[in-house]
Image (cartoon, rainbow, N blue to C red; front, side, top):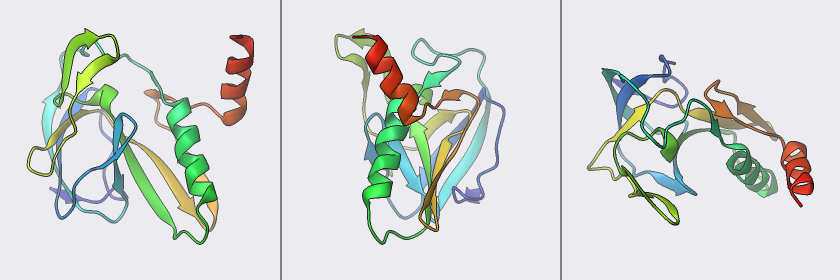
Length: 156
């Protein structure tokens, strides 16, 4: 079925979906790919995963990435309203290998030609009338800038 980020339905956290861009390629950001709200994607539900993979913990900390993305969005002047779907690599079922190296898990960027298999739901960040709104998803830990600063101070 064809959706946009704005119309993508929520699914069970263990549901695996095949997600493919229609007219664009993925927008890479850190260890994630982003999809803008108006971009069309083809989505097929594969089925429920039996278990999580080694790198796919129940709750994934995305506080730093959200802080970086929202800060960038705030600094962009005269930016249009937009909603962005964030597909973190910690939920990818392909383009990722369980073999760990010293830099972390190996990954490759999804391409338009090879769809992304994704478990659960992405999280969303929206810019609406100059305000930045983070739509929280229960399987992601999203911290505020103050929480991140506090953690940095106590770890010194």
